[in-house]
Image (tube, rainbow, N blue to C red):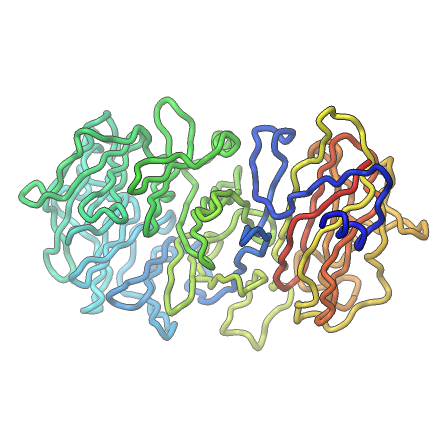
Amino acid sequence: MADEFLRQNFRITPNSQQAPIQIAGSSTFGRYQKIGSGLTYNMFLSEGWLINFAGYKKFIELNSFVSSCRGLFKSVRGNFMLAVAGSLVYRIESSYSVTQLSGSLETSSGEVFMDENLNGQICIVDGLNAYIYNYTTFSAVTKQTGGPLGTSLVPNYVSFHNTFFLLGNASSTSNGARWYVYKYATATTITEQTDLALSTKPDSAIAVRRLPGQANNVLVFGKTVCEIWTAVGGLQNYRRNSSVNIDYGCISVSTISSSDQYTAWLAVNEDNKPAIMVFSGEGIQRISTDGIDYLLSSIQEPEKSTALFFRQDGHLFYQLTFYGTKDEITIVYDFNTQRFFNLSDYNSDYHPARDMVYFNNRLFFASLKNGCIYETSTDITVYNENLISNSNAWDSALIHVIPRTRICESIRRPDSSRFIANSFVFTMAQGDDPNVTGLSLNYSFEDTMITELDVKMITENGQEMITEDSLPNTGTIGNPMNLTYQPRIDMSISKDSGITWSNYVSRGLNPVGQRQNIITYNNLGRSNDLTIKLRFWGLSSFVVTDGIVEVY
């Protein structure tokens, strides 16, 4: 079958060999690039094919004067969303009308945490205070006072469980090991029921999270240890499991997130560098590889991080973002394929999602980069920064092409001998982009080649190709050469495991209806270590599978 495929699609050099190229692959995060060069940006695997990750569009602008949206929560019982931007709290109805609630938080930055109880109360925690909003009475956002608040308790995290609000503690005093159980008091207040304490290690009880699928169990997070507690009723309410603990704590409570099966977080202890840990009904599991652990150890501001679980097209993802100015990276783990991928915004910086909720049959997230709520879906194939309600006045410069990139694993012979890469061919879907209305005849993407000396790329007619900077704009719909829009594939090669790269050679993709699906590159040159990078530029979706390089 492979021989017939080669005969039909490109020439076969006598005595040549077929080297498979894993285009449909994940980010491998090798400890060194020579070990693993594979990287995949803004795409993921589905049924063995590489497809586009979800795009997003700006849906609601809450506050244009703040640098980020601090939190987003869906009230199941109230059927609305609650969002925090700056110090203000907003209620978003199912009709998407927005109401700014009376009352405000005493802080204006940093992630907030929210949960609701059975009495119409939503508790908001901002790392300094706890607040209650009662949606049945439409009351103001009310700061909670009295008891341990402001003294032994600095509210750091909130989770609802068995009729109670469970509060983690950010106190840096000797009281920091305590965590607190709060119950309903009045329509706008809660009161302390019990205080408990971590005891496995001298630690701080920074967060408490109910465990999915375990009705009576919660996980109490310290900075170097986690303990499992069980609701037992009575005056004490909870009892620690004295036979089991997790010898990893949490470096950032914002990275704690749960799905219907798992609880994951960025973990650390006194003896080990950061790792990604997952707790399920089967116990604790470390999902980060040695390459991921090395990446995490290089993060300079790990406290500036956030994470979320979401399900997209049947895949369950855990998305982890570091948004410090020295880091700016987002990685995502797909539990279906057990693979990691990279995500980014249109500038190839960190992805802006913080807190994701499913509301009105749509998936929304709060933005780390402005005071807005975005809708996200794989049916959205661009990054659209225009406000949806202003669709009659959209700025095309704010509709960005998603930077989708695949760096394949290197091709090497077992004896490291040199070879000539004659042809590279792979299969992808074409002819389905509705944005293509015609093709320019003034610019040719086809029949380009790379010299064996890696000096320049030339056409078969001997004309030097223009540089990457002269190609149609890779960031937005805008086109500096005034060409008709045409999606394309850009290919670059490296002969030192991805340290340095050639300039790009481009292949224009077919207009609607022309669905020939073979992409071919010729004359990739001589090397003993060949790495191929593919960049997928266009406004529509991409569906790509593995390829073959003919070497001799």
